[in-house]
Image (cartoon, rainbow, N blue to C red; front, side, top):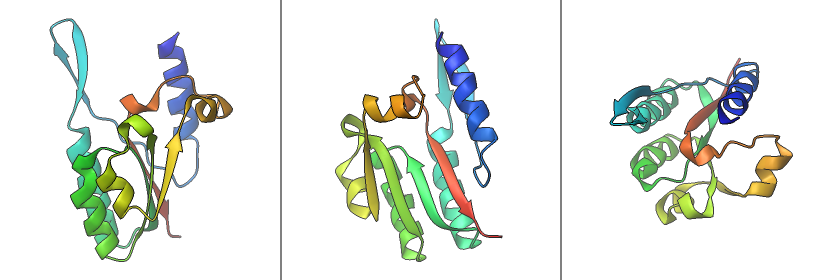
Length: 130
């Protein structure tokens, strides 16, 4: 069941030290639920926390080209950027600006015991300074 796997995945993220999980707002569109506001929230968090010097490395689990300006702004502040995404979702722009790109595949996800496709989710992990 996808809902059970998603809950298990999110629970493990919430329990991981130094990771902040942020979820978007779900809106009904006909018979489908769509997540709204995630891209803007992620880009805002990336830039705001970079300027507040809350992290050294940002790990963005999305290769969406829409994040390119935020990734570049963060890099311009001197932060390290890592991008993880499936080949089909890893844009040239995001890959180019990132210090490191991880190409995800089903085998990799199975190793993490995550059977839910994370291309539907966008997560930001900040390695916070203590």
